[in-house]
Length: 87
Image (cartoon, helix red, strand yellow):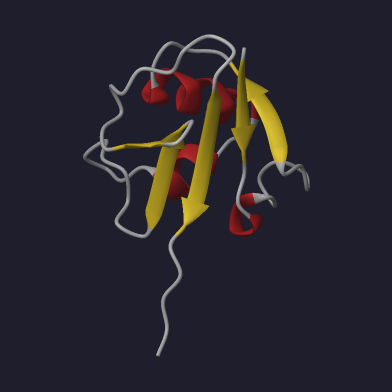
């Protein structure tokens, strides 16, 4: 299992949970697993071309994941962040 940290702008999809668990060996597999349980979550993180949206950041532990194929070790942690913007 992978521990997943959910940003505040996405907790409406996880019934208010800021930490959930997922299964998968890659970022994409983990997001697919989350989307099965929390429909709509993946679309807020990944675009139609299966790329991480520009305003989202995903980290596997301390390393930023740039693609859906990034590996996630069993027992690892996936951190999803929404980039802040403003002026």
